[in-house]
Image (cartoon, rainbow, N blue to C red):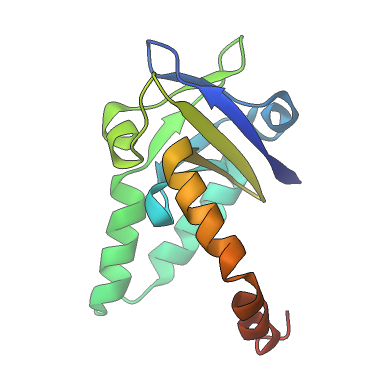
Length: 145
């Protein structure tokens, strides 16, 4: 299970070191794509296959289904972990998530996937979520969570 929050930096070649505890889950390959809230999402291949199958099953006659599938699939890139535990992030994904080599990058575990955030965007999102945590918890209770 992938959980936790880690700080890293991109190197000058757009490579990001994946925290060591997550590398085992990604050793057979992974896919990185646009995520929600302006982060990137990294899926192990088996999890990506599950998601891609669900996207393929969405009705193409529904505009939101097409839009969401396009959002995730058009932004997707295969990535491999190199010998030093790094993945290469394409420029278009780096730009989407406001990542640059000068700033810290936050990698968070989300059970079956990772999210990659700019430190600035993560701080804004985290602070707002912490502020709204009681309201969020109450809404989740209605979903039996």
